[in-house]
Amino acid sequence: MSGWEWASAVLILTGCALAFTASIGIVRFPDTLTRMHAATKPQVVGLILILVGTGIDIRADLNVWMLVLTGLFTIITAPVVAHLIGRTAYREQRHRDGFF
Image 1 (cartoon, rainbow, N blue to C red):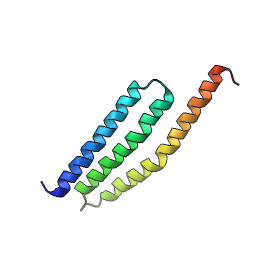
Image 2: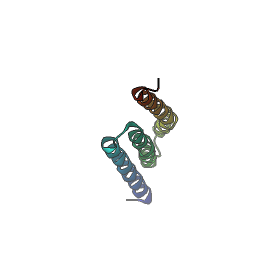
Image 3: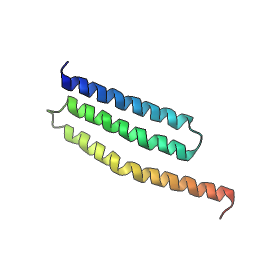
Image 4: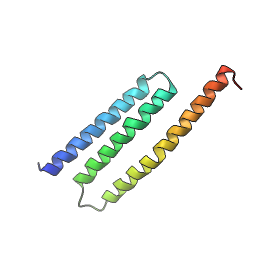
């Protein structure tokens, strides 16, 4: 195995470990806001590491640009989705507490 293959394997395995810890956090955390944190931070970083590792592995192929587009789409949409989920959870909690 060359140095590029080792780097690719390390990045992919690290990304898989981060995505796995994010999935455990989603299942184990008690409320919506902490679950949202587990779903956005390590999941996005894990996916980016997996995409970079895969891009290194297929660096001579034209499909690398699809990986770049996937990463950009994830980086752009993850904060928006997290904001909408957090806002909805906050509004629902206030509604249950009788503030409205």
